[in-house]
Length: 281
Image 1: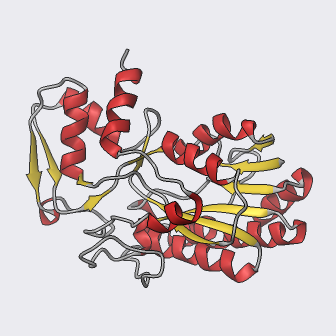
Image 2: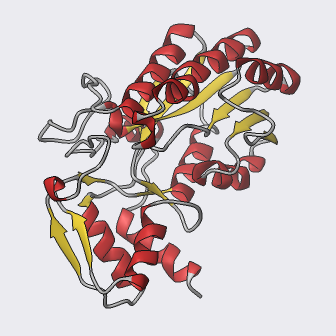
């Protein structure tokens, strides 16, 4: 199997670069080799690689900044996946593409299933939804994996931000009325690698860690696992203004993935504890 991986320097891409070689030859690219803002670069990279599988782990992920850069966010998240999909169809290659919980508005009282109607609240969510639509419309063989609250022990993410702030400040205030499933990039990569070993049917699937919590609960767990004593006070979303609106409910139901392929990611709190224990030795 010949695999073209985009976004090798991102959280998920870096983990995939470690897991995918067990499946075959991996051509891992970063922005310098494959810039998703450039249609010409995308087409050239795919045609040179001639992959059997394209794993698109690159994206525009700056949720607040996207509000002031909607065209760039749409080019990278909305248009580029469609170009990858067109090239994949020409090669009869499979496209595995990542999407987000932010395609939903968060007003549902229970976890979102794949057939629920998307209604993104912000530019980032709209751009990712456009990417989903472009992939499906292309007619290529595809898997779209919606995930959310992704973190790792590297780069810029909620875990690393809370660790830094908990050491710098006497106390933290974190939103408690937004809930989701913190998903480790390493678990997501492992799940994708398992998925690519199976006979696949095109479609959209949800893939997040098991269990749910709020941003406040996530922050408390980070501080506790770091053996810090910084108090974490719960606050409402109205007390923490952001440029982009966030959904209150980001919990995704992953039963379809488990039923179809027998894949279920570990409990978020267990992975977090393991990762932090390993990373802080």
